[in-house]
Length: 298
Image (cartoon, rainbow, N blue to C red; front, side, top):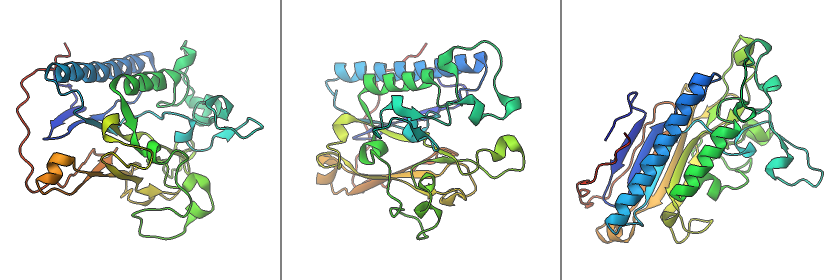
């Protein structure tokens, strides 16, 4: 197979689950960076498609995969702070949302607004452009993947739900944008271009899991137990640990074969800053079979 020159893609195969870990390049503001991002997205799509064809030949089509990491895209307006619902009936349809992050007059400093001819679908802060979102949704649809955090928290978390965090209360009780619904937070800065993002957040780090492993909306009937974002607030409380990204933790059940072998729950972590992940494997889990097929992206 062809390796990503920057090491932005890792593919891991365990006994009962495959993992694709990526650090997706930022879309940037120029035609060259847009083209780079388009090519990366296409490589991911082709990789997942090729994997599915291999599984079909091996009569193992239900083998799940987890795609995780800093994916540098916000699926909908709900995945960025400071949006406004402008529909009078209070609906949350995308057409009724006025997004801060797609309005270049607001989300860029005056001297940083991208110049030159661009498609309307390439406008907005990187991660929020229509083209990025469209490609992302196409990949999820083709690969039959579920955005598990949003699946479990369709409207986000309430102000009094701050799991795994060592402090009670705080700004998250007063300001809805401070709740643990976003994985990236703007930093404090003296420079106007940086300081304008203080107190703002984006959800751009994900666990995406094959639908066959998910079950219903509460995780019942599937392997998912819980999925939580471990940071919150304008002051980047929780587990930001000096980064502008915080971890997400996913807890899963072992499947039937692993449970029969003596396994329990497995915990996975994703952090957009360094991509660290950790899993407590069942003590008796057997080594994964060798991968005989080659996924060729050339």
